Length: 352
Image (cartoon, rainbow, N blue to C red):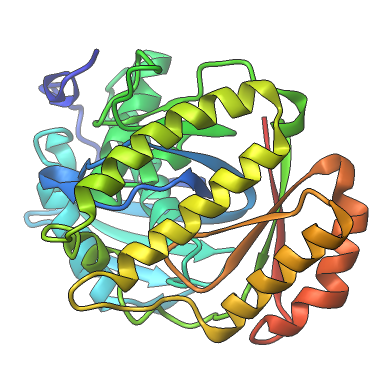
C-alpha cells in the first residue's frame, strides 16, 4: 500500500526555459457516491464510478521559467480570473510532490465537451486533465515514472484538486477509498475495478438529460462541508461502504435489476443528504422529479432496464445496457427530452 511519502519528489529536475503539454480527461459518474470528506481531500466513504467516453475536458498548459509563479486560465478562450486563483492555490499546495511547480508561469487553456458546473463532474475531468499535464511537464524535465506509478501519481494529484477527479484517470470502472473487499484500494488515489464483470456492464449507455445547464447554486465544496455536523453523516458513510460491497457482487453477477435499484437509491440518498443539511439546499429541479417519475412509470409498464443516477446537480444520467439501447433511446427522445431546459442531451457511454 502506497503512502503519501511515495508521492513526495526529490528529483533533480533539468529545468527547461519553456514548453507546452496537452492532455484530455473524461468525466465520470459515480454509482456509489462520494459525499463527505476529511482534511486533504480524504473521502469519508469509498466510491465507485464509470468513466465516460464523450464527456471530457481538453487542456493545454504553456509553461515558461519565471522568478515568481503565476497562472492564467482560459475557458474556451475567455480569461477566468476566479479559476486562475483556484489553480494557483492548488499549485502551491502540491509543491512538495512536484517541486518544479513554483519555478514557472503558466497559461492554461481548457475546453469542456459539456456544460460547466452543472453537475456533470467538470471539476473531475478538469483537474484530471491538469494532473496529467503536470506529470507530462515532470517528464519533460527528466523525471521517469514506472507506468503504474505515473497513473497513480496523476490520480493522487488530481484528488488534491477535486476528490472525484482521481477516478477519472482510469477508463471503465474505478474505485476510490479504502474497502476491505478491494485490497489495493486507497484513500489517496483511485484504482481500476479489479474483478471481472458481467457482460451486462461492459458497455453501459449513459444519456444525460440537461435539465439545467447553468451553474449550480451550491457548489460541491460547500455541500461536502455541510456534512461535517450532519445528523445522518455517519449512517450515510456506513451505508455507502456496505453498498460498495453489494455493487461488487452485482457487477460480477450481471443482475441489472439489483444494479438499478442500488444506483437509484444512491442517487436519491445523495440528494436527501442535501435536503437534510443545515442549511438545507436543493439541486434538483421540478423537471428532474418529473422525469424520474416518468422513468419509473416506463420501467413498470415495459420492464425495460432503464435506470437513472444523479450527480451533485439537476441533470439526470440515464443508464441502460447496450443491447437495449435502440428501444430505450426512442423513449428518451420521444418522452424525456421535454423535461430538459433546451431539448439538449449528451449521448455517452462507458466502455470496458
